[in-house]
Amino acid sequence: MSDENVPAFSAGSNIDTIPAQGAGDGFEPQLTAFTCIYCGSMAADTAGATRVTYPANVKLFRLPCTGKVDAEFILKAFEQGADGVYVVACSIGNCHHIHGNVRATKRVTYARKLIEQVGLEGERLGIYYMSGSQAQAFASAATEMTERVRKLGPSPLRRLDGQDSDQRECRTPLAAPVGEP
Image (cartoon, rainbow, N blue to C red; front, side):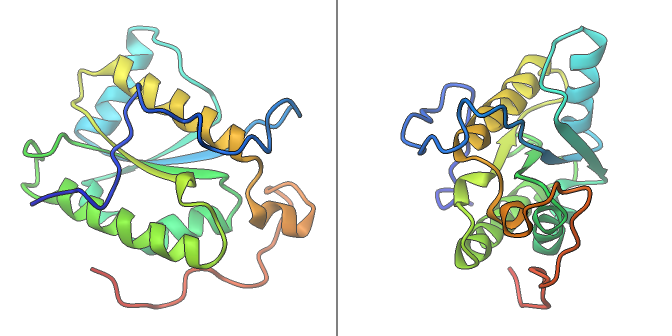
């Protein structure tokens, strides 16, 4: 199965084309990362154990498999103040649950379309593939997403209320029941 519809961002991706709206204003993006308990979470643990540094602005949510990442989870993360969201899945062809990473790829594609329909930039959502031993890849993904979202600036959802995400109550939910792949 091809994942050509979802750009898989790597540490070497070119992010120079993203408009610099938040650069230089002291903005520190809040990121949510959904990881599987095998590869994604283990890569984060390995980064910590080997003292590989990555930005502290990433909130990790461990799932049994990234195939369980639902578009609603992604939308809820944005709704609750995340400036960016990404999924850390097993390498394609190496999922502990056979096709969970492929399922996650499809769901990220679907969620990206949804967030673009409500006016968020698709670049605020990413997916990365790695094994549990790739501490440096995990740190690079966190750093890349942080820099990408920092250049985009605060989430328009956060700017709508003019409040910090911790104080914000969302008046219009993004996550409505809709069909998904």
